[in-house]
View (spheres, rainbow, N blue to C red):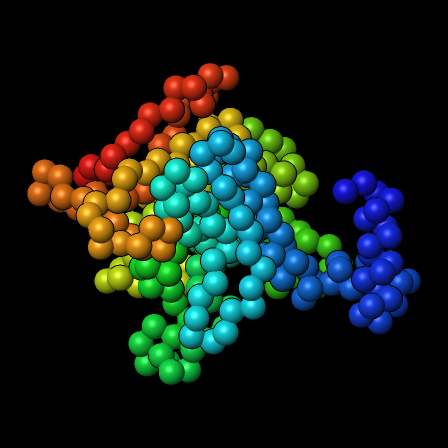
Length: 285
């Protein structure tokens, strides 16, 4: 979409929903509105990211716009294997605002942040149990972006500010190789996408509301980017018990353990990465 078409659609949007044109940017930049916009934008950013790194001849990436009802779950992004019809459900979540920490007094001693990994609506019928938490099976993978974690919380200025912890900022700048300014660190962390399998972050089958992501060497959250060329892999369904295209989790016994039906494998940073893709049949622990 070019700038002219974007402007035309913005004017039509303002007319349709009775938004004063002179104040549309004030509304969009409001700090109560911006987090909601960025949350929705992350879903589309993940769709574009996966479309870029997954071969279109093998995979169909789709962003569904559904208004989930209480007690139900809608998929943010789905990835369908064209040959088998197998569906991978992807949840898209931002990091918790201002959550980057680097302190010897923290429960995790190395730099880390947390991810907002719970529903936006509560389910009162589950108030005594899971409530707004996801369960294993609601989605297969979660993909997050770490940029929100460097935005200071509880600020009163019109624009976002950098977290005030200079020790944490210094360590982040060292890691990303950038200046200690909001603009530089925000841009650097925005390029840092991570993914995890739902069962790897779950506790007793329930996804924590704000799981932690280590800046370096996280055993669960793996990097995903255009340069690292991750490869989503799959295998044929076992038996006839699962309906094709249902998105149902599959298991396969190997060496006495259950192997995941779908994996991601990070390939070496090379221009020929897609030609060198490795098909993994199970995640061996």
